Image (tube, rainbow, N blue to C red; front, side):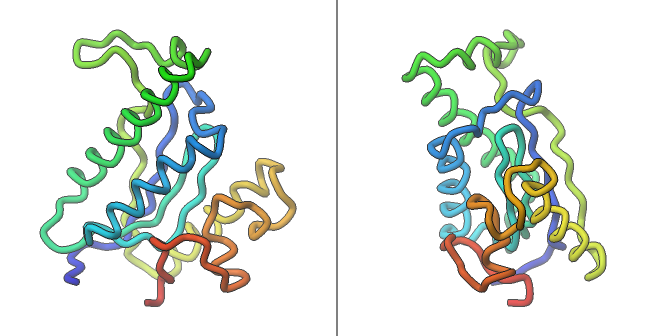
Length: 170
């Protein structure tokens, strides 16, 4: 697999910081989408954490795939699936996501997600640590490896709960 781009740290935040990923089924949408992109050999994922209102990733786009296109498709698909789930459940969250913009009625993710190319090992490791300590900082757990929706267990305990995850040294 040809990698032509640097790994990138991205942060994706729910519109108005709403808890669109508060349930396991919501998080599963993002995880399944990452699995699909890895299986399709469009990306590799070396770290992640899913919080209720946002998530962080370190990923790298492969070959001829354009990072902006991959990210756009990923965010579009996950938002469509989350909205579908919210509609089916008649969730109270759905009206809060209404924006009635020219091109959409609802908006799940804030526009212009933060993306930082990781051009040095030092910055890469800083972002990796930041990702893994996010749930600790939010008082969701005492140790990073205790949080289920993160790559911390992989790095701290060598337990890979996620088929799409690959160690950054590989």
